[in-house]
Length: 131
Image (tube, rainbow, N blue to C red; front, side, top):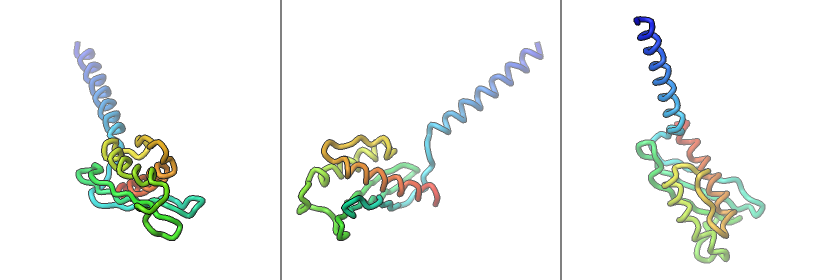
């Protein structure tokens, strides 16, 4: 009987440890609170994206994304392809919802913006992990 109780305790301890380790793995990375900036690589037209992320209590709480033209000027109302500009706020909202740049869905007609956004957000989150 003592042997059965001992085996049961060991099995429960191993099961508990496995559950704990699985929960830790599913929680994802731990980000330090603060504001972090990330940039994408420049594309073939020398344009890039830049994101500022605010992390509070280990979660993304605010996202500000901007794209820049080849001269380093922010794209805005005068930029000829407005779908890219309009997509920016949608991408910001989706990142706050998903907490993962790779889980942010593309916005139809703004694939280049989406790719730059994900790259910039990933760079900013790497900074949040290292601090």
